[in-house]
Structure formats: structure tokens, C-alpha cells
Length: 144
Image 1 (tube, rainbow, N blue to C red):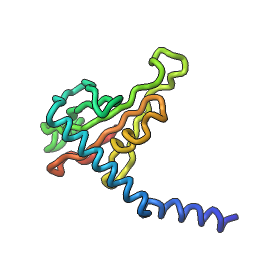
Image 2: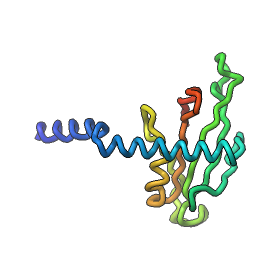
Image 3: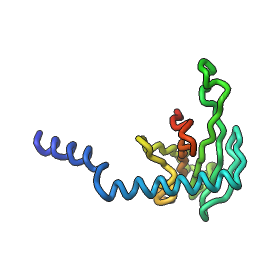
């Protein structure tokens, strides 16, 4: 029993380095780059969500947030723009079946939830995710 659990844990922890997982990470990064490119050219950054149609049935936004939301560091006057993508719920938010939004943060390092939303987001009610990447390497970390 203990050996079986240990084997399951080992297999799960090594799954991230499989060729399939590496391919999925590459697809996620490409999708995130697509949203960032779309956002830079067509979507103006905003301090609140301003949703725009993108990638067919999806909605995209560029959310401008402070680097230091508490204002206690040298980063206090700097902002970062997050590319955000969502897929709408299949029922209105007023429907009793609506259970609320799901925020997806795939973790890291370097993971982007954008590709995951584009590939499988329609399988859940409302899904929201961000790509904390930036072209110049700044603003790669965020808290939700």
C-alpha cells in the first residue's frame, strides 16, 4: 500500500517533464504570446476589465495593475499590464446553476493559463486566467 502511494506520488511529480507536458507548456506560451500581441495592437490597457472579443468565442482584456499595490517599495509608481482571457459561462450569472467564476493560475515557472483556457476553457462555467509575461522581463509575478 505504501509502495503504491509512493509510486503514484513519484509518477505525478515527474509528469511535468514528459514530452507531452513540455509540448503543452510550449502551446501555452504561444497562446499567451498571441494574446499579448493582440492586446498590444488592439486592446488599450485599463485599470478595470474592459472585455473585447478575441479568438472566436473568447473575451480578452489588458489589465493595468500596480507593481507594488501597497506602495511600500521602489516599484510603487510602476505598473504592469496583464493579458487576460476568459470564456463566458454557459448560463447567465442570475441562473441558479451559475456557480461563480474560476480563476486559473497554472503556477510556474513560466506557465501561462491563457493556453489552457483557449484549449479547454469551454468545459467549465466561467474561467478567467492571466498571462503575467511581459516582453521585457518585468512584471512576471502577480498575486490574485
